[in-house]
Every structure is written in structure tokens, then in C-alpha cells.
Image 1 (cartoon, one colour):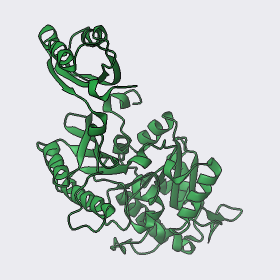
Image 2 (image 1 turned 60 degrees about the horizontal axis):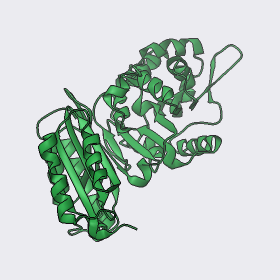
Image 3 (image 1 turned 45 degrees about the horizontal axis):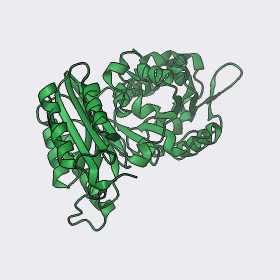
Image 4 (image 1 turned 45 degrees about the vertical axis):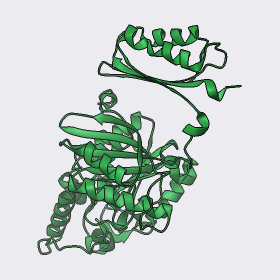
Length: 407
């Protein structure tokens, strides 16, 4: 059994060189110490190590042991810090509460300083911090503990966390940065599927408008006018609701317009990388399946739900939709069907939409991401404000160096 009065914490940092771990642990072994915890890192030529050592079996006093350990500094050139360690004192008075914070965007001075100051204001402890990507493009992960967050005027502990998240989101928006905030019980659960709301994440909105205009002109109607849509309307809902207006058009003519549709930068690359990493991919669309097939048939997606125009024996549209019809309200039912088929839970799903009511099905999954939201109607774990949907991968904590193996 450990003797709490002969436990020591040992920390060292300095320039890296071969044999440092062996030198330190050999000295500990010679003093009859038993290492009960260790964390060692080497980054950019800088070595650091933290040890908790039990010297219960050692005959010398703890003072003599500490003096001997401090001599490692002169023989290695490392800065060494040694203290008595008491597990009962070191343990936090309240249960720790971890969250994973991911910040993405163009690099600029002061990002880490501003974010860390905000956490300090709320008494949130930063446990780990690492760069996922560096250079002109910046991506960083922080593991933070909100176990002792200052509630302030908040009524409950949960309210204090939500207040801190709002402040953090506002801070990142002011620096044109994207933010993802995941709680421990969510980010530690292995994700298995990524679901996209197609019109609000993968297809460029401008090309959707051009598609509508081209179809309208072909029907001999007046040129399509870009009217502002209600904030909660769905991207392609106008076409779905007015399928009757397409009556009499050849499906081949409609297919010819799919070349107008353009994907957001990195969309197909994102799907390809996610597939190579073992994720199942599902696409939900309120648009028509003929353009879904044209764009995504080579991407290898596992599920694709969209609307199908009913055709007569000559391939002419009847003006009706085949059942089932994909609408805003049915997308969540489709997601439930996919989950049942794959035998997975919501916590194992990553869902991407625009944060509007039309993509409400992305709410309450393992990781929900709003891509370039115009107006947020639902609460999501993260927001990507950049033009590249490919940046979803950084929200999964995949370092830039590892992504290069997939590209």
C-alpha cells in the first residue's frame, strides 16, 4: 500500500536528447521508487515529463530523496521541480467536467490569449491544448474543465456553462473563427455515421437559385426572381411544393440542368475522406433524386434520401411526387429509420446542416455542426463560418499532418 507521506511529484522540462527518460527513471529505480503515474511529451525539440512516484520502499527520508532527484538537473540540463505529493490534497474538491473545444479559421495574433482570458474569467481550467493545423490556416483543440466554473448571476451550474459558451461563441465570431464545443460524454463516444442536409451544406446556394431559374425559363414562365425567403423555409422546398408546375417536362431535359448545380468547395473530398476513415455517409435532401444521383453517385454514400418525380411511360413528369415525400418534418423520421437500420444511437452520429429549422434533424445528435448559418434557429455544438465544408474534419480532431495521408 502506498505511503502518502513518501509520494513525490517530479516534473522536468528542457531541450530533448536521447536517453532522458532512461536517465530519470534509472535514478528513481536506484532510490527504490515506484512510478505510479507518468506523462511525457516531446514537441519541436522540447522535452517534458511529469511523474508521480511512490518511495514507500525507500530507506532515506523524503527530504534526502528529493535532494537526490534535484541533482538530475545538473546531469541532464533539464529544469527540475520536485514536491511532496498527497493524493488526497491533489484531488479536486468537485468532480471534474471535461469539454473539448475546437477553434478553426485564419490565423491571427491573440487567439489563444483571448480565449484563455475568457476561460479565466469563468474559472474554467485548460487541461490540454494542441494545434491541429498551423500556418495561414489555424485549428486548435483545448480540453477544458468546468467543474469549478463561476456561476455569477447564473441560477445553476448548467446555466453558467451555457453563458460561458455564448460568450465564447461571440468572441470567436468577432474574430471570424469557427467553434465546436463538445461535452465529455459525447466526444468520447465513437462516431459511426455522418449525415448531411444536402441543400444547406453540400450544394452552393447560388447554383440552386440558377437551377430554379433555368427550369422556370424552360417552362416558358417569367424569369425567376430571387425573392428573400422566409427565415425558416427550406432550400429547395419551393420546387418540391410546386412539383405540379413541372408537369409535362421530360426527365432528360431536367437532368440536363444538373450541370448548373455546384458543390461547396471540398464537399466530395470530405465524403471520400470520411468513407476511407470508416464512417457511414447519409444524405438527406428535399430536392429531386435525378440531380442527387448525378452529383453523388460516384461518392460512395451509404444512404441518400430525396424526392422522386413521378414519370409516365415516356419519361414525362406527371406533376406528382412518388411516396415517401421528403420534407422538413420527415427528415428526423428518416434519420430514426437509418439509426434503426444501422443499430446506432444519436450520440454516434455527426450531422451537418445550416442551423435553420429546415435542418432541425441535426439537433440532439453526437456532434451537430451548422455550416455557414444565416440565422440560427436551433442549438448546435459547433458553427463553421468558413466557405470550406472540408473543415468539418478539423472538428473531429484530425491533425493536418494525418489528413495529408487521405488526400
